[in-house]
Length: 276
Image (tube, rainbow, N blue to C red; front, side, top):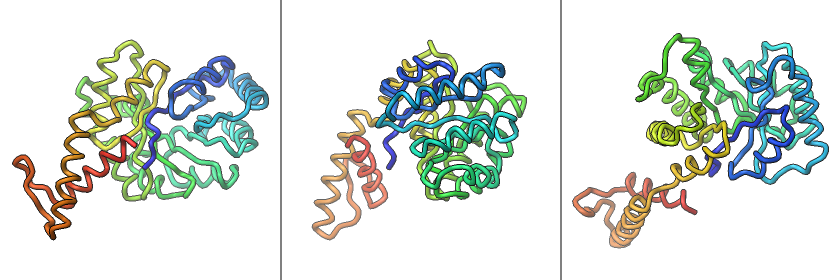
C-alpha cells in the first residue's frame, strides 16, 4: 500500500517556494509548469526549475513535474527538461487516452514514474485504458475544476455531480492493479471545514490521497487519511477475536452483536496497516 496521502502543488517559476514545498510535511511535491504559470512565464519557469535542480540535491520525498498538456506548444520542451532528471516523475494534465501515455513514455527514461491527471469527460471515459497503459503509472489523479468546466456544471456542497467520475477512477485503478487515485484539489484555502468534508467524501468513495494547493492543507488531510482511535480499537478487537477463533477452527464469529468473517477480518487488517 502506498502511504503517500498528500501531493502538494508549487509554481515552477518560484524558486523559494519550491524549496519550502519540498521541506513541508507533504508526502510528495508536484512542481507545476502548467496552470499556475502565466503564458509569458513558461520559459522562465523551466529555467527556474532547472536552476533549482542543478543547485539542490534531490529530496528523499517523491517529486513530480506537471508539464503542459500534450496539445500545448510548451509540452515538448517541458518533457525535454524532465527527461534529463530520471529521478523526477511526471504528471500529465488532461490525459485522455493510452496513446497520450505512450507518447510521453517514448520521451522519458524507463524508470520515470507517471501520474495521468484525468480532468476531461474523455479522460474519465477511458480511465481504465489509461491506468492499464504503462507500468510507469503509479496512480491516476482527478481534476474536478476542468472536468466541471467542460461539462458546464457547478460543484455543489454535497458534490453528488462528482460521484461518477470519482468512482470511475477508483474502479479503473483497482482493475488495472495500481494504487487508489489522488483526489482533486480543494480551492478554498481558508475553508478547513470544507476541506475536511470534501476529503471525507473522497475517502468514502475509495480515494486515499489528495492534491493540495497550499502547505496548510497538508496536515489536516494527512490526519484524515489515518484511522480514528475508535476505528483502530475496533480493528484490534476484530483481529484478536478472529485469530483466536480461527485457531479453534472457526471462520465466522459474533463480536459485539456483529458477524465477523474473513472479509471483515481482512478489512480490520488493512486498517491496522495504515497506522504502521
